[in-house]
Image (cartoon, rainbow, N blue to C red; front, side, top):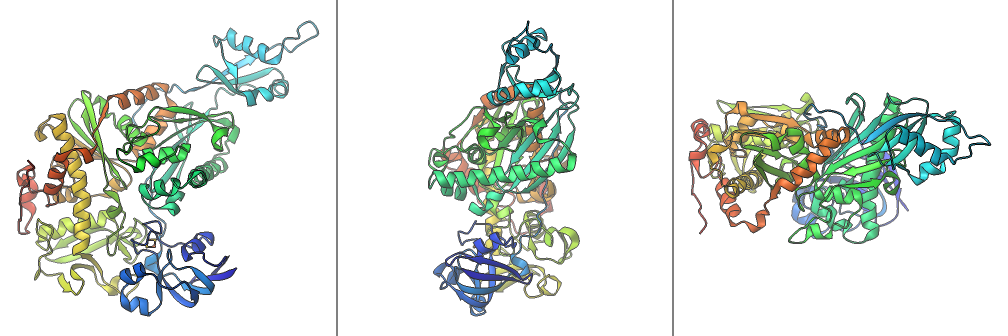
Length: 630
Ligand code: FES
C-alpha cells in the first residue's frame, strides 16, 4: 500500500500499487475534472507530480500533454498509476468545481390522481365468536369502501398482525393501483401522502419529494450523476456495463446509491418518514433507464441500437434496494428507441407537445440532444450526439458550468467583455460561453461563415498549434499563466455539435413532409438550454430562425414530466399514448441527415435564405457551398 498526498489541500489517501491517481482522488474525495471518464482524450485531469514514483508516461500522454508540461512532471490522473508514495498538486484548471445544476423545470397544471390511495378503515377486533383472519377482515373492510379484490403485498402481510393491533383496529390502508395493499398506517393518515420523482440525466441526477395531496414539491435537489466515474458519455458507461453482470451491477448500484443519498437528505430536511414514500417514478434516456433498472445495455451499443425495454414497468422498491417503503412501487416510463428514452416522453408531456395546434420544435439539449418535432397531429423524434463539446470536452479551455467559467461574451468595437459564473476569475469557457463567443466573433468578422478564423482580424493570432482568438488575457485569469482562447479546433467542435442538432431537426422536418415555414415555436429544454442566449444560438444556426418571442426555455422538463406522472395516473396513460404516437427516425439510416448536417456546418447554414434576419447581423465574410445529395 502507498500513500498519495493531494496538494494544496494536503489530503492523504492510502491505495494499493497500480491504482490510478484518479481512482485515488475519487477515494479521497479530491475534486479532479474528467469529461472522458478516464479514456485519456479530454485532457481535463492534468495534475503535477511533485515527488514520488508513478508508472511510466504513456504514449497518449506524450501526444496530448504539451512538452513543456511533460518536462515539469505533469501527468493525466486517469493514466498515471501509483508505484510508491507520491505527492500531487491539482491545479485550479483541473478542478470540477461545484457545477451549476438546473433541476427545476416548467410544470403544467394537472389534476392529482395518484396511484397511491389511502383508505381509512375502522374494524372490529376479533373475538372468540369472530375469529376471522386479519387479512380477510381487512379485505372485507376495504370491500365495504368499494375496493374489491385488493391483495396484501407479502411483506406488508407479514406485519399485518402487529400493525392492526398497534393501530387499535383504526388504520389507514395504503392501496396501490386499487389492487395491492402496500401499507397499513395507524390512525387516519389520509391527509399525508408522498412520493419521489427522479430524473436521471447522463450528467446530473435530480430527485424530488412530492406531496401527493396538494401536488407541491416538499424537497428538490440534484447532484452530478455519480456514474460519471464509469465515463462521461453514455457509450463509455454502456461499454463498461457490457463487460459482465458484476460491472452492470456496479453501474446500477452507483446510481441507486446516488438516488438514495438524495432521498435521505430530503427526509432529513422535511421530517418525512421513509415508510411514507410509497412510490417513485423515474425517467432517463434509454441507457440511463436501463442502467437504473439493471437491464443489459449491450444492444444499445450495437447497430441497430434497439432498446431492451420499451414499455412502462412497475418494480418493487425492495427488488431495487431503493430507499423508499420497501413494499412501495418504482415506476419507469416507456422508452421510444435506443437513444430517445423516457426522459423525452417526460419532456413532451410536460411541454404538452402532443396538444400543440401548430408545429413545434422541442429540443432537450444535453450530452445527447433529443429532438422532437410535432403537434397534436403527430410527433417525430430523433437523437443527435451534440453534447460533449457543450460540456467543455474537446474544447481547449472548455469546462463545465462551474465557478469561473466564462458564460457570456460580448464583443463591441473589437473589445471583448466576458461574464463568468459567480463572477470569479476566469478558469475556462462553458457551453453557453462558447456559443456566445462564436456568435459574437461571426458578428464582428473574426470568424467567417465556413468556420475559419479570419487572419489579420484583431484578436485572431496565429500560433504553432494554429489560429486562435483571445477571449481572456492571462493576467485576468485565475491561474494568471495562460490566456483563455477559442481555437480553430474549438470552432470545428462546436460546428459539428450544432450541425448535428440542426441536421436532426431538418431531417425530421423533411420526414414529416412539412415545409420549414410551418414551424411556429421552439422550446428548449434541459439544464444547458437554460443558459443559452437564443439570439446567439440562432446566429450559429443551432436552431431555426423563428422570432425570438416564440423561443422559450423550460428548464428540466424531464423532471417535471416525472413529477406529473407521479401525481397522476392520467399522465401515465398519456405517456404511453405519446410513446405510441411518436415516430422515431434513426438518423444513421437517413441519407438526408448527412446532407443537412453538411449544410449546417456553415454558420448559420449554407442555405442562407433560411436565416434572412441573422444574415443581416453578420459582418464576417460569407463563405457558403450548398450541398445536395443525390
Ligand atoms: S484525459 Fe484523463 S479523464 Fe480525460
